[in-house]
Image (cartoon, helix red, strand yellow):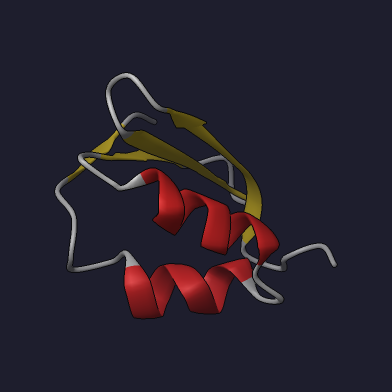
Length: 65
C-alpha cells in the first residue's frame, strides 16, 4: 500500500543507515538503525506511522535535502 507521506525507503547495512524519502522530496538519513527495524518498516502497513512510532526521536538523523 503506498504511503501518503513516505515515497521510498532504502537501507545501507554496512553503515546501518536508513534513508527515508518523503513525498515532498525531502530526504533524511537515520543513523545506526538496526536492519530489523528497516525490515519491519518495509513490511509495515503504514510507513508513516511506523516512522513516527519507532524511528523519529530514537535515532540520530541528517537532513539531506
